[in-house]
Length: 341
Image (tube, rainbow, N blue to C red; front, top):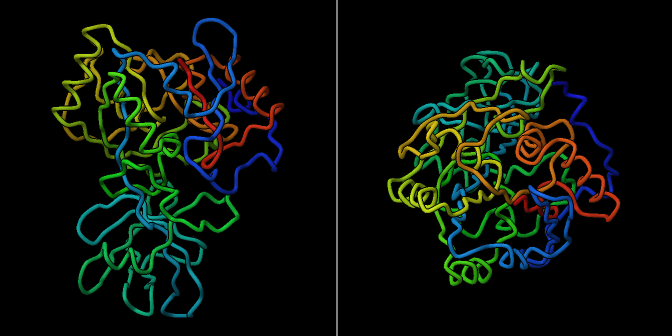
């Protein structure tokens, strides 16, 4: 299967630069798994497609202000660091820009010395391992000097930083938002649960595995970067009970999908506990848990586009994307949503 099989044309002006005024007023394309009739609604209409026996599974990760701007000790040159994965109390895997000018042994300063970093080693994905030195709480310093890690295709400054968080975000650790969840308002989520739909909360901290570009033409040669996930006993019991009563399990986002499919056995039941996942889902994959998906419109040639193609079929997805372009849907992180069901 080739990388070029997952390309499509997208005009730049359809890349959303800011969120809509109200979370649940974004557009919603409904793509049926059986049948060909696409429906065009708004996200608040999601409730019309859910049934009381359904379980909606959400990822309650919280985005950290993971982008740091600093200087190099030796030259005073500007440096940018995106922290991705915590290795221990003070060490992180990170992306550094410009990477070629940040070899092992480089010392970095951030926030007028509030935070110092020392590059210890290189990583297999072209990043660095950085050991930070600081006084007090790393999390508090990060909140003070860090910047919300918006994707590079968003050029417009974000006025309200909370719009890059879901309303149910709880546990800090992500370097990017699980963007399908950005469409939910508190009112809509309450309306959904009031109808009898079960809400299950899982955790996957979004890291490089979710947004790292595919750089090989044969996609089977692409290796996903590991991401941490966690499923509680309560969540696993709720998910497994839904399977047993033959209710539908609908994942909110590709990150939730990765979490569920990684934790499931061949019997389709989810095992509780923590873990690291490198799962790469592309056409030919047999889903063990997820039967429906709420997602955004993804970048061409991305692993996320491959995942939704695995669920709905590549031809159907690319046709739906062509329709979305024709009807001027908004794409990517702050864009519109798709319900595959």
